[in-house]
Amino acid sequence: MTGRDSEEREISPRELSDAQVIWDYQLMHHTLKRCSAGIGLGSHDLGVAAYSAALYNDGLFPVLVFTGANSPTTAARFPRGEAVHYREHAMDLGVPGSAILVEPNALNTGQNVAFSREVLAAARVPVSSVLVVSKPYEERRSFATFRQLWPDVEVVCASEPVEFSDYVAGIGDAKLVIDMLVGALQRVMLYPAKGFAIPQEVPDEVQAAFERLRAAGFVSRLIRG
Image 1 (cartoon, rainbow, N blue to C red):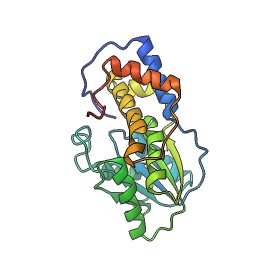
Image 2 (cartoon, one colour):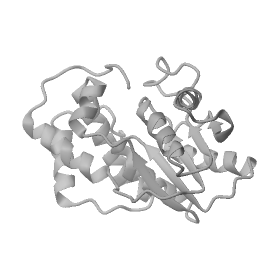
Image 3 (cartoon, rainbow, N blue to C red):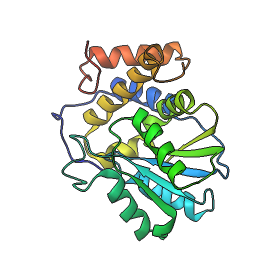
Image 4 (cartoon, one colour):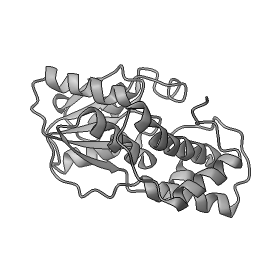
């Protein structure tokens, strides 16, 4: 996981409760099933690679795509690119290199979808369903993006089964995690109007938690303007 890159501050119980509401909302709770391919979305979180490897080893897909270049958050951690490091980690966990396709150029979730499609097509992998592995708080946005940009395949979403408190402890920076939660939810709400994702219903309590956290200053991952 990533190191600290935000200013430390004390997090109140109410802020942690609001963050938990958003965390729970982002989880899709899909029933896992065997799919044509797995797609692990690159990020700072090596848990995505580890869980993708576990799902492959459980027989849930025959081929695994890791997709992602770098961002300011990951450049130091994964200097050869997110997808490349994910592949190496998955191989350490027993996934054969022949079963892994690397897509090293995507800079956002939309490109993760588009470029993964191209890689699978080039490898002549027939795809009717994909099992998309993301960070826990990115499941819903990943689902909405894949459904918008690849509507003719079934999309099953998964993430490492970890509790919010344990995830925060693993990152080591509660403010950063809450910033990322708030940013991910904002994109769920804004991106359908831009044509980037299908709409998702956002319950009132989730919207209220978002507004309180934004007002409290958890804004470093928000889209400006």
